[in-house]
Image (tube, rainbow, N blue to C red):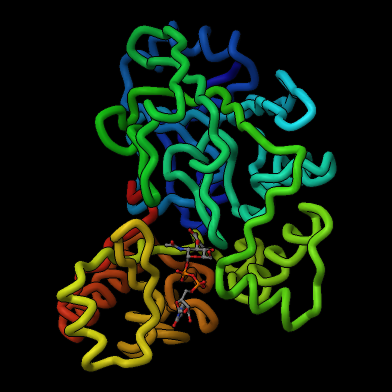
Length: 337
Ligand code: EPU
């Protein structure tokens, strides 16, 4: 374990924003983590835990220590003829875990293919896409309490997962380092193809589902066609969260916008923020170094030299215009640091 000073974070965030950390360290094992917890630089400074850097916007230098989770490993903990418990360490790339599952024909996370980021970050915002979310398969989370260095196992219920939300974004924000997660996957066919865009894609391309890889491949190609590759153009996926509204608001809006898409589940109504943003004329717009992606209005992009403040400025303008047109407040999904 080696603590570095004045470290440039531009390659460690998918927005590609230049920001420096006063201190930086990579953690490759639980032993290194314990060593770090006892280090005076760690103890005395503000801390920030980084995974894939795919849901983060740095708006200034970080005056503390940035810790990169590099704990690696995937193992089968338990299995019977129907269920398999797969434990993956926090620094694993999420999509590598999906590939592991798909190659073994384990069902449960194939709809979450190609979501950028790490396994350790996945429970923090309960990653979700194409009709599935981590909540559907998460069994438990292992995490170290930063103040005491003690390891705790959180059951799925204790993680309090919601739409892009968990206890780790609320009461326990910055209090735990997630070292591993265990997922409960299925050996029996358990396909989930009800999400409209996925269903249409499968029908249009006459794809039959025989194994989880068929779904994984379909999701990957939908994502590739809509979402920009951060290696080519800086971005952090959806910049905003979708919006929850009540029935009165839905009826009022539908009176004006008959074609407005919405999702309803368990009495909760969600409007795609991408649609709201597009209606305000933002889709594909560029303002200097920053812009709104041409194929998915939820995604803000860095055309090369953007600063975090420029992204924030664009986001604020978008929030304002959605408020003005629809009287709805959209909220950032990315973590602004
Ligand atoms: N839509 C528009 N204009 C747009 C974008 C979307 O009109 O620019 C409409 C679509 O026509 C469709 C609806 O909104 O009717 C939903 O679109 P889509 O399926 O693309 O999903 P989303 O709600 O915009 C969410 C997630 C994505 C995830 C997709 C697919 C959030 C904040 N975003 O987007 O997650 O990939 O569903 O399940 O919930 C991410 O979190 O980084 C991310 C990309």
